[in-house]
Image (tube, rainbow, N blue to C red; front, side, top):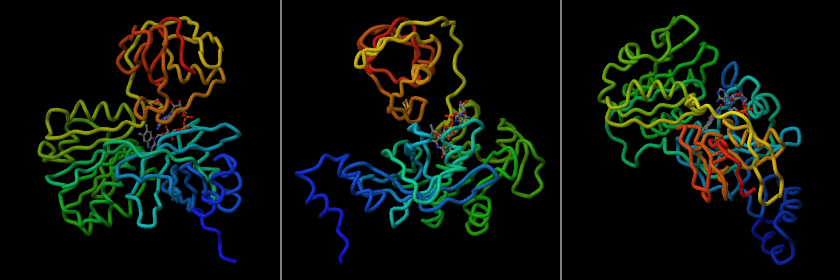
Length: 362
Ligand SMILES: Cc1cc2nc3c(=O)[nH]c(=O)nc-3n(C[C@H](O)[C@H](O)[C@H](O)COP(=O)(O)OP(=O)(O)OC[C@H]3O[C@@H](n4cnc5c(N)ncnc54)[C@H](O)[C@@H]3O)c2cc1C
Ligand code: FES
């Protein structure tokens, strides 16, 4: 018997069943068949370093694709709780539609622990649209420096692979910080690319071990070592990615000195101090609940602690997944410390804290 094609199945079923019912039955035939939900199935799971794993995923046809350097939200069911986190693609989307992400273990981290230790071939995640502007221009010109720390190497690796696919048309130096050699990902591939393309150079910088190889150095990101690692830095377009503290330091060292600087932080930058303390009443207009939530804490975190699970993704104000209406009260943007007293407005729960009693559209 010929297999039933998805489009035919959809056409036959369309007048009769609701999308969730269609999904329920379609996924018994194939794990990523869905009426409209973008889903991605794990097709490979391989160690990338002592504390990182590379997952190869096959998204279904509802996922609209991505540019190298962008990231997606992945949602998994972990012990009955749906958890969403952002991950950058570590390579351009393959011809057969496969994508890969490399995930570093974070101490006490729920999603990263699941992806490293429990995720297996066949597991299916919800996958969100791609976003992020750490992408290369259509016509790549001039010289580039990519500064990466820890898992921040992933979008920059995607760009290196994209450029390698084009024969490395422009000079690129990747400077890649990690605590130890064992935590570095993609080492053999990066060394092979450096050996193959004179235009590509890689430097591995270890913060907790001595350098032993010619392409290694030691130390945290700082002005003098950075200039030694990339002597012509001032002529290069710079992309930097890593934890918030690294990105903030890199920005301080490089901003204004180079023709272009673009950054992406995987964790929030250090927050300005505020003296918000105590609790306020937060009313959730749609569910009718009233909660006492702490001031000075991100509303997303405070709501989750009370068992409310608003949609979220990046948890640092980038993806807009947690956007929510506010119909009364004052909030503070935790990134800048600025208070917003405008009563009817939209806010992002992950980077806003309550200043006064609030009414939220939840
Ligand atoms: C745009 C974007 C792209 C990203 N791309 C990648 C990627 O390609 N690979 C990757 O491994 N991660 C990436 N991340 C980080 C990822 O989204 C998660 O934050 C990370 O996997 C930790 O999630 P968790 O559920 O394990 O930790 P949680 O349970 O959310 O947090 C546990 C603890 O760890 C802290 N924490 C959270 N994230 C980090 C972190 N990244 N570093 C150090 N401490 C942290 C938290 O503050 C908390 O104290 C990206 C983040 C963003 C915003
Ligand atoms: S979760 Fe991404 S903006 Fe709040």
